[in-house]
Image 1 (cartoon, helix red, strand yellow):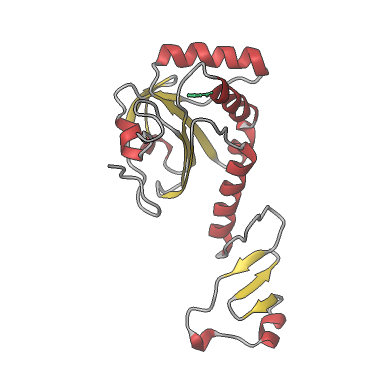
Image 2 (tube, rainbow, N blue to C red):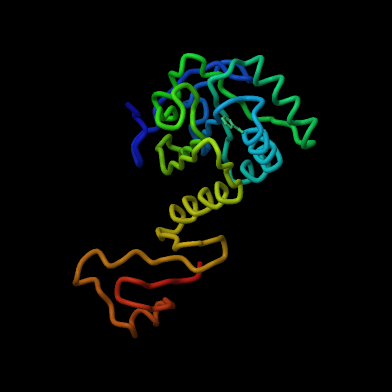
Length: 211
Ligand code: BEZ
């Protein structure tokens, strides 16, 4: 059973990786994007890793450590990472976990037997700097992930934390954010009061503002 649930501590792990033995708690104080892929030397995964390698600096700019994972071994990961660098011209600088015994995969619910009985699906876990699991996304084997969307989720979580707001559908940095709805009926404000605060008032429960 997966132990990975939103707004709870992300399951701790100690695992062999291309950077030696790593633990999730080694990264406390940083955000972590932990992502699994079904298998090394497969076409969709290779394009995804090219994408992650290309955009590693953008994750680092946001204080995010990338960690990859599959049920392949360390030697396979190292050989594949070299191939990815040759194909795309971007070095894979982040660790890739070799989860041969599926300990990490099982803790995070990465193996979903309906999709693949042996390999991890394409899962992404967003873990904040306190080690709390903040978001998860799962994709099937035949749909490659979108790096821009993963960066967007990091931006949305960090913006929400920093400003006590939420982010609306299709939000991107620089766009208006959602003011949390009033906690109770006494806190409901008039349209005029909302406008004086600089809010774009749509309804009592839907108010937007620029940061
Ligand atoms: C792929 O990355 O292309 C792939 C991986 C596992 C199963 C099917 C496709």
